[in-house]
Image (cartoon, rainbow, N blue to C red; front, top):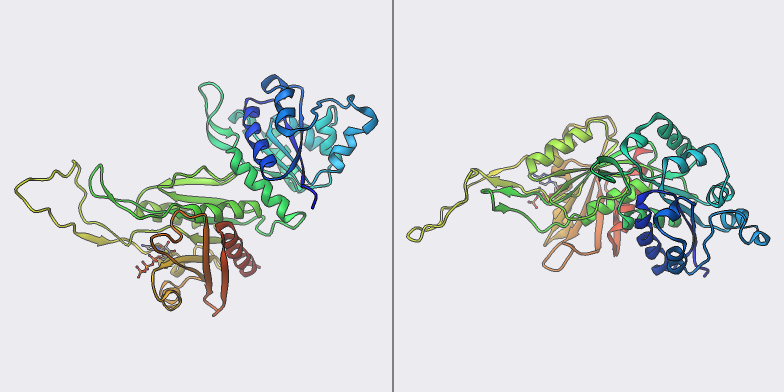
Length: 400
Ligand code: CTP
């Protein structure tokens, strides 16, 4: 099979250096990449770098190798065009169909999916001109990844950072895999909880669990790739923010409940992938608990945490809101799963077996999705993304 052909457009922003990592991800995973920088991008990263990393010639203007008609051919032959970073200027040119260099010509001739990963200062991103250009591009079917929030050039912080290159790569991989398929969660708002809660005993100790958050992050990433607006409520995770996803960090079960209920108010679906502690210490010691040589340790008294999944299921914020739970079981997996689905009152329950070496922190998963209507969808052992896609298939079908 031919290698998928990717055009990596790079426009003139400081984040251009991060596109080197994106390029490396593409080439190392078997993609043929043609880099098309703008003239301003070359102020940040030179043509020699792009050429050496891609193994292909690099041009910015339409006047090189004119006999090969590059201003038409590069776009025509691409399976995917991704512009990262995309400046306010390139978004404006793309939205208005200007074509004054090789990249803008390529964007006009491409008939494949196009992904833009904008990066700029917050003021430029929020300007109505930029927002209208983004809306125009999205309306025409382009994927415009939301910029991340964080440190910008100089001392500024805010929305406008280029998302992690690994996350942009994941968006591209999904867009390539889905081809011209309609994004079936377009216009939907979905909420995903991920990670594991920590219930503090004192300022340095907590009761926690071994959830890494990878399954919840895979759910968030895949929902965003399918066009949804995603709120990811993340409990104690150490993973890069998925591109274009609104991440709300939380610590305890009570904080997670508050954040999930707030986000669920206008959500079409809520997926509770987080491992929520059922109990928390009844008392919190404001100072570190000290051991006393002549005394036995004090027992830890626990109180119940709210059951967020049961609450979401019993009080749907909107009619038709789909609620999905996860159940990690060590034995009698299916029987326990069926009983739990009934008890919690959700629409679907993803049941998987956990143990010392199973699921926690792993890249892969195996599960059965139980439906309240009696449905049973087995998901064979595979990447957590595949399980996530099955969950969204079922949710999208239920939403109609
Ligand atoms: N969950 C929740 N609130 C809690 C505990 C769990 O919302 N206080 C959610 C989890 O996010 C998950 C589902 O409920 O989606 C299953 O959690 P689990 O702890 O396995 O179920 P429990 O009801 O605690 O059952 P058991 O302890 O008997 O396994």
